Length: 170
Image (cartoon, helix red, strand yellow):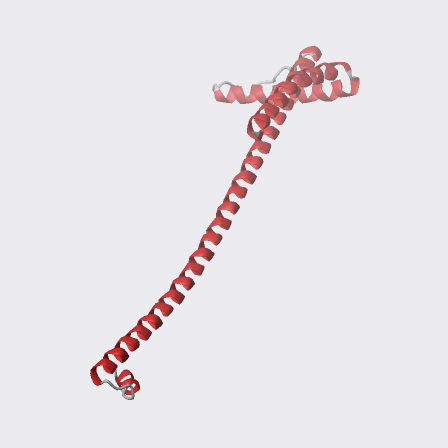
């Protein structure tokens, strides 16, 4: 029953992260300190991605890469921050799900181990009971044989004095 609620909860968190990311992008463009720091991040990201693309496509990499204008840098940085936020939330949800699943599996494994221990103990108990019953059966068989022999000797001899000797000799 809790599984659908957990899945629904993670879906809600992922869905809510997108408007929060949009809000972060807007705040990044408005706040002057944050704006200056994200412009430098956007310029570094632009330089890195352009250099990587040039290397992948076999173009010259020793050319000067023009920096983005301020508004484009703010927009790129805002998009980057928004995507990083959504990615971070999604990653956290995945980690949470994996840990929850691992805990669930560990619980199942522990229950299985306990059941195995109970079964082993029951097997040992049954083995002891079987051994005890076999001993009692052997005693009963021995006692029955003694009685049968005693009765046979009594009816054969008509005497009871040699019964103990006859039993011990058999």
